[in-house]
Length: 325
View 1 (tube, rainbow, N blue to C red):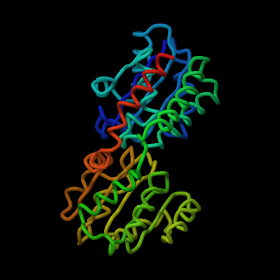
View 2: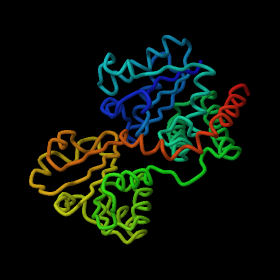
View 3: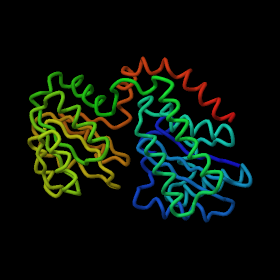
View 4: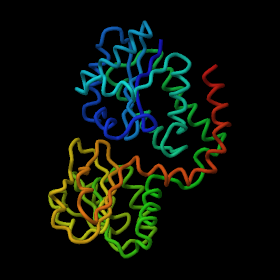
């Protein structure tokens, strides 16, 4: 029997979601622990900015769901009563349907976004590499990739240029109006940052500074748009000059604290796209600081998705066919 226990941006606020994240460097260790849990025959863990989901094949539905919840409780060291109201559980055909929707981008913050397919493939490949999957999960996850590709081939669910980067650019324009004269400091060079710098470059911002723990990766991204690279150890020195600060790292702890901006004398717009969050919420107590987290972008994104929503019924019909198969 297939069981899913998880949560996503639709059900869970970021302050809870960030406590459940499985980081890439520790994912295999977590998978081994989950696979060794009594009653679990095979397992895959999907962990992104917007969702954490445990997939497992089990002998008994109720016992299996309890085992997954207990694993979250023990591994992430978070009390079950705190997270229980935000968790969902799916089984059998309902679970298969959910996975197909996730992989096809129907359950994403940006409807039809394509990044999730790569994230699901990564999650499965990590599990398979250490022998955490079984025959059923191997078949299921190979099939979910084919379903996602079929949905994109036969619908317009991913049509148009809509990304988190373009949503951030729209948010900046909504908040600041003209942004060509602004200086932007970006922390982190993951996929989100790549989309972001492309959008900001198209808007013609005056200067972009990029900092990343791996300096070479920052240099590679900076070359694409003629940005300036600064060392990660020295990025706080740019705070006095940056009009906009955008953080999108995979750091497990707070990077930007209230005390770092105590001497700031002019307005700053800060956007934290990280889960867990990089920016301390107390920064909002400082006059002139405007702070947005990842979940705050929903209202911008929804305005851009009108045409894609028209394709949802067609995509759901395909998924229903594939679940029956």
